[in-house]
Figure 1 (cartoon, one colour):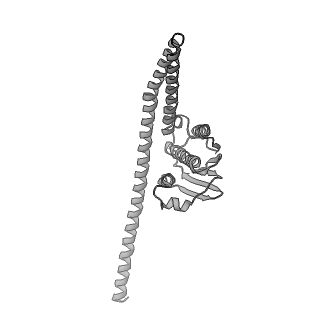
Figure 2 (tube, one colour; figure 1 turned 180 degrees about the vertical axis):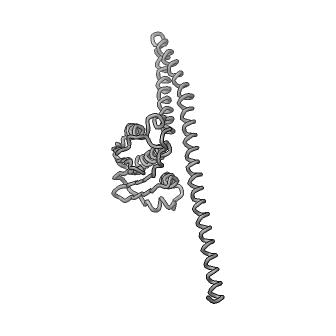
Figure 3 (cartoon, rainbow, N blue to C red; figure 1 turned 90 degrees about the vertical axis):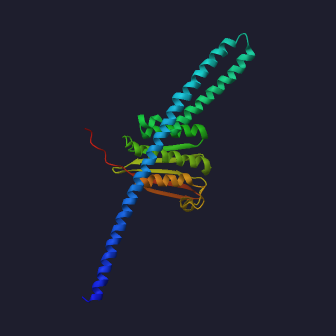
Amino acid sequence: MTDREREISEQVARITAENARLLERLVETERRFHRISRGVLRVQEEERGRISRELHDGIGQSLTALKIQLELVERQAGGEHPALASRVAAARELAEASLAEVREMARLLRPQMLDDLGLVPTLRWLARTLEERTGVAVALECRGADERLAPEAETLVFRLVQEALTNVVKHAGVASARVVVESRPQSILLTVEDRGTGFDAASVLAGNEEERGFGVRAMRDRVQSFHGRFRLDSSPEGTRLEAEIPLEPRRPSP
């Protein structure tokens, strides 16, 4: 080997070693990014839960007490002061409507049943309440998803379904949507589809319009932070969202 060949060989070796170090740093940076992203999501959910409890236990209880007091005043004024009773009744109805709205907000922020009962009952509640509020019927199909998942995985799937159905209500212009949750040995597969007005999925995911599609990009980023697979297809015939989230192996019970 000539000196020139030896010099080139050493340069190639140095470049190869440097590339390997850069790749290792890139992989570690990506791991750190995923850990930070999941940490941020965990903190967000904890804050949602705190606000939800404060709404339910604080404002909710105050409105309940107000409603009871107004009912008492309405009964007492009913016979002798019908005009006053009518006004009190209107105030009571307003308090009841406000209480229902606060409870709904608390449940949507962080439904307690997600922690207590798990993913499937919570998705059934979400589908039922969405149809009651908007008229959009949701066909929910859960395949092999009866067992509880890790809390982070259950929260992720619930938030994906919640955001996807919100988009259906706001933009698709349809009367129904379909949600399929399939539990596999090492992952959970989610599909949400509708037959409504489509859009340019590639443009939305690329963020060409910053104010449009933020929720969709947030869904994609959530899935990727769990090392999952996210796919969104849309056309004038409808939209299909598919997300596969790998499940971490459960630790054996002590």
